Every structure is written in structure tokens, then in C-alpha cells.
Length: 256
Length: 316
Image 1 (cartoon, one colour):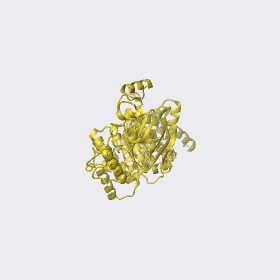
Image 2 (cartoon, chains in turn green, cyan; image 1 turned 90 degrees about the vertical axis):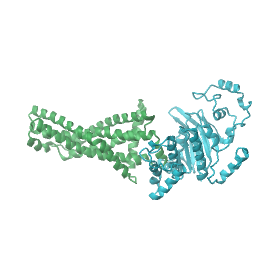
Image 3 (tube, chains in turn yellow, red; image 1 turned 30 degrees about the vertical axis):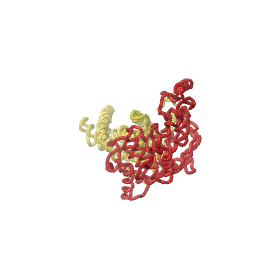
Image 4 (cartoon, chains in turn green, yellow; image 1 turned 90 degrees about the horizontal axis):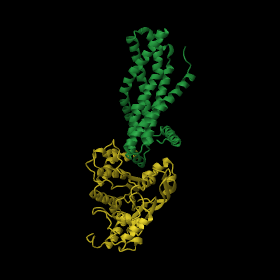
């Protein structure tokens, strides 16, 4: 990636152009079902275990922070409500984003990049096959599906971890924790989190595919592409997360 | 039957760096052409431009009345079905075995049954001598086999135009000879238009109908084989003889004075030297193998060759 402003602008432009191409290509038949299933399975297999392992301590940290904060404020009865809210609204989409980009995105980028420098992508185009249709669209859809499912996993594991730490380690009352579950959180929080995960999955896969398909300069180029794809994805995801959260608070009325 | 490719005023640059400019040539339908050039003169770029993978800055490429450079992406995919391209390292799909690699275009583009696909794939694998290696992965076989597998995949949709990107790079001389024979046999069998990009002079002398030479960002010359092999143009002579004296230097080009001096020392500046041009230049052409039925075009070539080199091909 060149450091000049024009170069950066050109890259953002072609990244956006590819995102549009992907959207335009999604309805095109025949749908690459086989590739989609393979990729979904592949992305799930590289992300499930790290996601679960990350979300347990993540839930625990939130539970510990909120546990001590609520005690200081004398609002122990709200510790359950607050930690569910934190896990559901922010923690789970962020953890999902990190893992989809870090584990799924890098794998996609490295795979496509290796194919690109071996001329496989060119060969495919010459054989009259559009790599966006054949390779990128199934990956983007697979990544979106897996992100949504992972978000569910993170929410469950995070809330369970929070419960465990609050009740077992901080001597909170199980009844109060459970009873306050729905005082602040509402169903639309879950929907919002799932929509976030859907968008994050799409962004991670599109950036990874773009970087992979534009890799050049041999094996080192693939390494650089993977590196850049992670950095760019993280930046985009956090900005998107901020925007979507801000919109969410404007659009959905809050409880209490 | 092969398709004519007409290139007109083609210019390609990356940023400020001009790769080549104003390239005009016509690849005649059904004939074998070779594009020569020192390393780094953009021969592969030329190939990729022909199939529309790269967009030129100026000029046109006309195939069947359509200008490739102006086509939209969607129509480009249609035109590309006319092409078979053999990439430098075969460009096989690493995750598939050879059989699936070669069957891939058929499965994507046709509604043929698996048994029919099997028949076609095995036929093409037989053509390139890969029977028995169907189950191997591209990573498990030698570079020569990868090239032949890539060729089989390029052939599977019965292309009208076949482009070869350095078919001889990384192969030993014996395998290069076999591959050249295979290319000539193929041309006799399927009658497609062939373009071979290479810097192997031996192949260029034996195989093609036409030779082109790219040097110093330009197409120095393009024409029938005999014309280039007997040409007095210094660049052409230097390259086809593979010697150091001449305009081509280690780093791209030399200054004019030095070239004059060297050619004078060699005694053939302006071609008026001790050597009569063409005395050693006309290598016999490679002809299709004995088992290959020759179409009229190859019959004519064989007769001409026989007349030219009576002593060497007396038995034919």
C-alpha cells in the first residue's frame, strides 16, 4: 500500500468498488452452494474455539468490573442487569469482530493471496469464471453467517461466564442476578448485536478478499496483504461499531 | 478453425513507466507465432493484455470484430471462452487434483454428464501424456508435468486461440524439445491460433510461422519466421544469435557508440560483413510427429521444408 494520499484514496475507492461488485453479484445464479458450505464450515472451525476461549475471560472481566462498581455505588441488585447489557451490546459484537477478522479474515486473505500470486485467479478469469462470483461471494456470505452464529455463542458464553464470576467468586445472590436480567436489556439489544455481527462479518470478508485478490510481489506480498487486511478490518470494524451504536441509541427507545 | 487477432497501436504503462508502446501486429488465424524479447520487456504483460486481464492505455485488440479493450467485464468473460492460456507455472488450482483441475472448465461452463466429462478429460490428458497421474495434487508433481496439466486444462474447452507464457522456462532441454513437438502436433490437430511468449531462441527458430521481437518498449519487428531469421536488423540478429555484441545490454540497453564499435569488431555492422546473412540462420522447422494427420497447411509447410533442406529430411 502506498503512503501517498492519492494511493490511499485509490485503494479505498477500489475496495468500495469491490464491495459494490459483491453486492451486485450476490443474486447471480448458479449460487456456489458447495463453496459456501465449505467456507462456512472452514471459518467456523477456525473461529469457534478461540471465540469461546476469549469470551469466557471477557465475560469474567466485565462481571468483575461491574461487580465492584455496583458495590461501590450500592446498586448490587443491578449487577446482573448491567453485565448482561455490557456483554450483549458491546462485548459480543466486538469479540466476534476481532475473531472473524483475526482468524477468519486472515485465512481468507492468505488463501486468495496465495492463489493470486500463483496466477490461479488469472487462470480462473481466463477460463471465463468471475472470481467475485465463484470465490468472494460465497466467502462473504459464509463469514456473515458464521459471524451471526458466533455472536450468539459469545453472548451465551459471556453471560454464563459473568454469572459464574459474579455469583461464585464475588458472592453475589443468584436470584438477584437473574431477576435483574431484563430490567435494562431488551430483545432489540440482541437484534442490534446480531445485525452488527452480520455487517462485521461482511466487512471482514470483503476487506480480506480485496487484499488477497490484489496481493502482488510473491510470498512476501501475501504476508503484507494479510497484515494490511487485519489492520484495515480492525479500523473499519471499530468505526462501524461506533456508528451503528450511535444510530441504535437514536432509533430504539431505551428502557428505564 | 482458429481466429485472427488484430492488435493496433497498443500502449501499456504502469504509472509513469511505459512497458511498450504502439505495438501493431496481426496474428494470422491458425498459425503459430512466437513473441521474443529480453527479460523484463513486458512479454507476459502483452499476453495478459491480449486476454483482457490488463487494460492498455491506448490501442485496440480486435477478435472476431470485437475490440477486447472496450468490452465490459461481462462480455469479456464471453470472449475469453475463445482463449486457452498456459501460464508460466501451469497456474493449477492447488486444492484440486489434476483430474478435477482439467475437468473444472467443463463443470463450470457446460452441462455435460460426468461420464462425458471423464471421456474428454482423459482424452486431453492422453494428448499431453499425463495418463495415470489423475489423482495427483499440483504440489506433488514436477514443473514439466504442471505445465502439461495446465495445457490440458487450457485445451479442454476447445479454444480457438492458445497463448503460452514461457512454456520452456524451468524445463530441461529434452523436455523443452518434447513440449515444442507437442505444441506443433497440437497445432496440426486442432488448428487454433497459437502465440508463444518466450526467450528461448532454439524454440523460436524451430516452432513458429511468425516471430515478433519486443525490445526497448517497442515491437522491433514482426513477420514470417524466415524474414526474421535472415534479418539484418542489429537487435534481431543479436537476440536470435544470443550474443553479447549488439544493442541489448545487461541493463536494458547500451549507448550507440559502443554498439557501433562492437558490431564493427564483429565485422557485420549493417549486415555487410563476412557472414552472409541467413547462411546458418535457417534452422529446419519442427514438423508434426509421424502419427499425426497433417492438415493442408502443414502439408504445404512440410513440402517447403523438404525443398529447403533436402539433405536433412530426405526420408520424410
